[in-house]
Amino acid sequence: MTQTKFKPVEEQLAYLKKGVAEIIREEDLKAKLEHSAKMGKPLRVYLGVDPTAPDIHLGHTVVLRKLKHFQDLGHTAIFLIGDFSAMIATPPPIRNPPPLTREQVNANAKTYLAQVFKLLDPKKTEVRYNSEWLEKLSSYDVVRLCGHYRLARMLEREDFRSRLANNQPISVHELLYPLLTAYDAVCSSPMSKSVRPSRNSICWCTATSSASTACPRKSR
Image 1 (cartoon, helix red, strand yellow):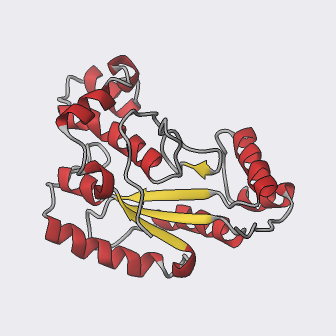
Image 2 (cartoon, rainbow, N blue to C red):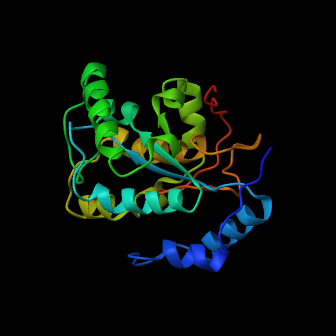
């Protein structure tokens, strides 16, 4: 396998910090860049978006441009389309649309890609759909996945905490949503048998969760 030659780590880090308010944690990103350079293997960086409408909004361009910066440095960009997530509806208070049909999701996803590739290089972008692994989870798998997290920790989230304080309802599927997005982070990255993100993966805009259920790899 041909190794990729990258720019010096400090130069990469300086480029990636442009326009960024905070990196959590910067030392972790630096360590990943160092390992990537040492192994000659690109990082895998992903952005997940639920296609709940035909158009991506202006706010998406901020993270898409940062994804492009990783591409510019020779790393792999993964655009993850949350087609499964869109069909179960995104929890409030972010937005609370009705669940979409498969046909609506597919139509929206198609327009998303046309818009995203105005910023990202399609030849250097890996497109994934979270239905690839989430539709394959059995009820048993979902219950085991829930066992990796504590309800008290989940309720620390600002949106859940404020709604509890104001006696506003929280549906059970809303508690599952962050677990499924964390599972996306695991399944869209290279994995070991223990199903944890490798040292060469960066999970973008979400926290990762180790899980015992195996994730299917994309066929090539």
